[in-house]
Length: 170
Image 1 (tube, helix red, strand yellow):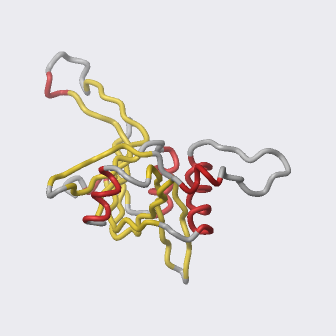
Image 2: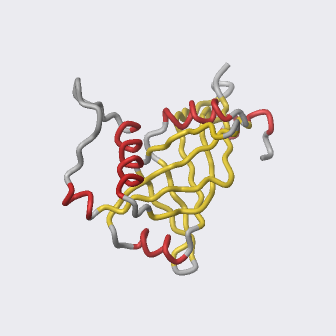
Image 3: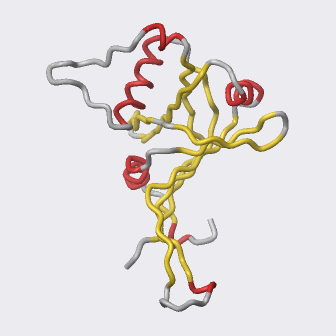
């Protein structure tokens, strides 16, 4: 990263940024060419044996260009932006005096289609809760329509690289 002063390396800070993001842009290769789509996502952060780890999940139809691309080549990259504001740094009309304030997360890894029902439900729970779903009082688990659940691909990204970046107004 060229601007080391804007780099976010602390895992918990990266998770804090990711928590504010609602859309993730998923990049992959389709038929030898770059292909990117916005997706809703969820995630789970773990602490295993003293090492912090992240799993990112997304879902979609069981067929289509995204599914074909991921089966052809499971290596993916993703980015998510939680905040963005562009303004002139000196309030002039000079075009090159503008800057963008933002917080973002970028990662890469391997996309894995989840087949196990319990893993799929756990991933969908993370996705639903991240996107604002709230369990009704007294309910402990999310009940999915099994017909719809059967028609849905659920994918986990096994993270290999993760970083954050921010430029905030002072």
